Every structure is written in C-alpha cells, then in structure tokens.
Image (cartoon, rainbow, N blue to C red; front, top):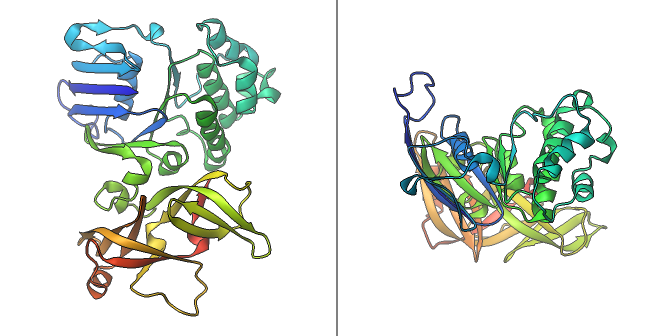
Length: 365
C-alpha cells in the first residue's frame, strides 16, 4: 500500500508554464496492484512520481510504501533516491548506448539487493531474448522501452514508477508493448504507479484510478467504479464507457460467439480466444448502449441486460445525459439525450433494460 500526501505552491505563479496548476494539494492511498494517475498536462502527475522517487522535495510531503517512510517533511525524513529501491521508467528509455541489451539489463541487476526477480524470468516475460546482443540504437521504440522496463525490474524494486512510458511511441508500437505491461503486472504482483494522459493505457493496465485536475485529486477509486460515473470528466469524453472484469463462461464456435460473465451480467461477444475461466477486461462504450423499458422483439441484438438506474447527470451545454446503471456489483454508463430521459422517466431506482450489441463490447486482454 502507498500512502501519499503533497502540498506545494510554485514560487512566482505559473508564468513559465501556463498549463501548470499554481499549487498542488494531493492526497491518496493506493492499494496493491497498478494505480494510474490520469489527467491533463500540468495537473501534477509527474510531480507526484518525482516526489515518490525522492527527486523532488516539496514544501510538505509524506510518502509511505508498505509501512516504510520514505519522505516526511514534518519529521525531516528524506531517504535519498538511490536508497528507496524504486524502479523508474520514463518516456525516453535512457539506455546506455555503448552497452548491449544484456549489459544494460545486468547493470540494474548487479546493483540490486537480493530479490525474487530473476534475469531469465524478466527476459522471458518481456520477450526480449532475441535482443540481448543488440545495441540500443538498433532497437525500435517499443523494444527500447521493454528493455528499460526490464532493467528497472531487475533492480528488485519495492515499487515500479512509470512516467508516460509510451508517450513517444506511435500507435503500432504502443499496441505492441501494452500486453507486456499487463502481463508483468499479474506475473510479478509488483505495485505500479503509472502516469499517463492516454485512456487506452489506463484501461489496459490500471486497477485503481486517480483523476488529477488543477493540482488536486478530483476522484480516486477502483477503475470499474470511476469509469461508470456520469459526473466525472471521463464521462465527457467521446470514448467514455464502463470497464468490467469478466471471465470466459462458454464458447459457441458454430455461432461464432463467446459468453462472458461480469458478475451477474452475461455478455455475448464475437468468439474470443481463451479457455473457460480466462479472465478478461471489457469496456462497453456509453454511446453504444440503448435504454428500453421493455424487451424489443425481432431484433439482431444479443445482449438485453436488466439494470437499475443509479443516477442521471445532464450536460446542458452538450445536450446529452449520462445515465449510471447497476446490476448487483456491475456498473454501466449510458449516453442518451435529455429527451430520452424525459420519455422513459429515468430516475434513480427505476428498472431499465440496457441493450448492447455484441460487436460493441471491446475486449481488452
């Protein structure tokens, strides 16, 4: 668990960086797993990472990782960065250009205390065995970042800090590396603080989401909970949608369909790879959900989900309404018109059917 508190005011205002919040007041507790810091540029994301790493000394701060106090300005505690046992991965890989990949990796290993993370395991996990004898300048951007992640992990860190690690990569390279990040999260059970302003990275990696805005925490909590909130900035995005943890329940090859279960919800999707019981993450875009008070007949739709309305948030400037829905623990978010809210008399507690095309369910590995 990570306990973090930060108070800082920038001297001289924000003349040098107009998008920077004039001051930071940030408090959060991050449970085990991957925690994403998400928000616009200047919200304070990178300052949080630098404070945790000991690279930035705020006017008032407290950083505690698994009970170990790394920073406490009130009690004048500041553990030097090199003694914090944290792995750092930045936007640029920062590999040693004169060393081969194998030597770059072992640079982190030979300076590390004894630990459970082994060289061969990391090479296999990140798929970098074919790269070991190459120099950094011969690698693609995605390959360099995988090596940088491997070097950080071989330092046997108690926490992995990743500050916009994919920001410099194009879409193809980003798609190449995201599965590796998701894999290492599960394989190593290592806590991760992940900074990004790219929602696709958050959806693929994060368990906990911390939304930063103007130097403050706008909201914090489980990813599934915050993506289903209609009153948060995420809901205003065109790609808004709830994220659900699901498992493969059935395969029907003849119908070319798979049945996924997300808590009490049953979702039919195009046939997916994976044995029964495989855990998957899915996203249902808010704009793809149709609400109804009774089941339609003679329709190609596969998913007719009984839900209850939790909340309705209207955005009069955009002429839309965000409807939060629940079925047991599962949460969905639908975007409809204010007219639909009035015609269906949508209000908290009202039963409503959520109609979802199987082709609209995004399966995230």
